[in-house]
Amino acid sequence: MTKTEIKEIMGHKYISTLFPAMQGYLLARKLLDIFVNKEPIAKLCEVDKNGDLILELLSNTVRDDQVINAGSFNNIYTGNYKEMMGALTFVFEVNFKDFLAVSDTGEGLQPLAEMMAAVSQKG
Image (cartoon, rainbow, N blue to C red; front, side):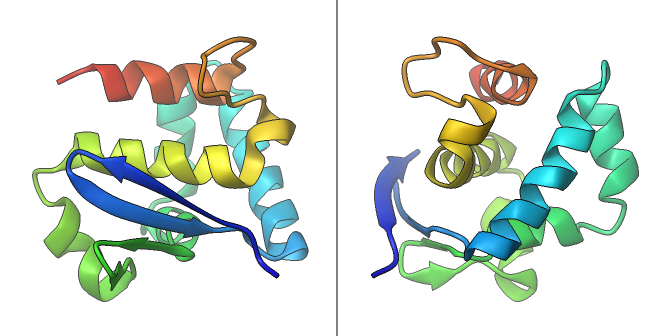
């Protein structure tokens, strides 16, 4: 049985399902390359020029019973970037918590979680 978690983010119900092991491993490798960099946001923009990475990260996540994909992404997140960062943080918590030291309490944060926490607190 695949693990799923539910979380409310800015008044919306999100359900995230674990990535299959190989997909999760490949995504973790990409994320490590991005977030061990001194400028993680700049590196993310360089690596994810066309948005494929963010779409893949959100591909196993549903918002208010709507699948997040290329067709729904703009409708959901246009002008709604704080919620988008909250959704990404949730995906990281569900899928990579032990690997990337992402925690609900904020203890032992690594560069990935520090960047996500900083972005989600702004605005």
